[in-house]
Length: 96
Image 1: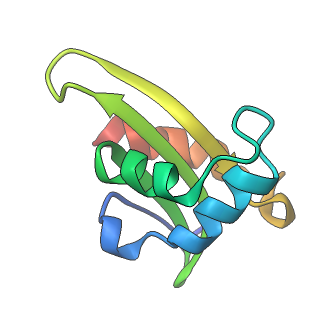
Image 2: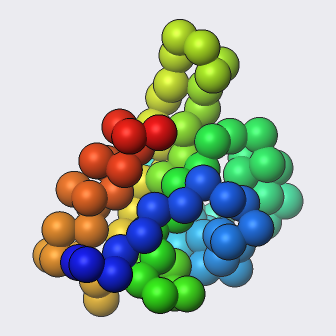
Image 3: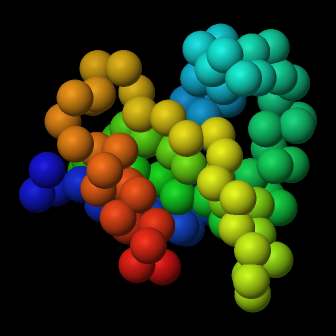
């Protein structure tokens, strides 16, 4: 995964992909409205896993930016699973 990049820049996140996955695929929030997804991203520390310009993973941390962080909404796009992306994604979180 030499070309995997982790970003916290919300401008680089693919909101359409994140919404699609959370709304349609995620057991924990199936059917979630787009407005809620967008607001949750705006108010959290988010991590996108990208290969080139394509987002292949996502994680969102609810945090006070001082002492607490709860990692939620973590996913890797199905076609990219089994390649170690989630492990590298978590490692990237630790580096931030």
